[in-house]
Length: 101
Image (cartoon, helix red, strand yellow):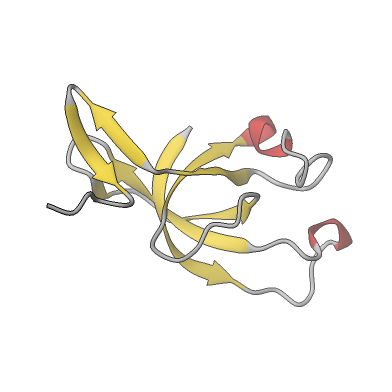
């Protein structure tokens, strides 16, 4: 699994009929030590309704074909979760809805 941030979309009018109606998003992996975008962008099939700027969890390979939306599809990367918060080593690295002070 990879944690990343949605940074764009891919539009394709001509594609495999099995991909018809699916949203393709560009995700850039996030380094959890620095919480900065790092690595090559990847195109993922969105299975959860993610949007631009959201932090998401992605799976690859055969795991990407294990959701209801991607079963038996030509899919190598899939977004399977929108992240609410990430805690690591007793510290909150990310929070989608920060508490007001």
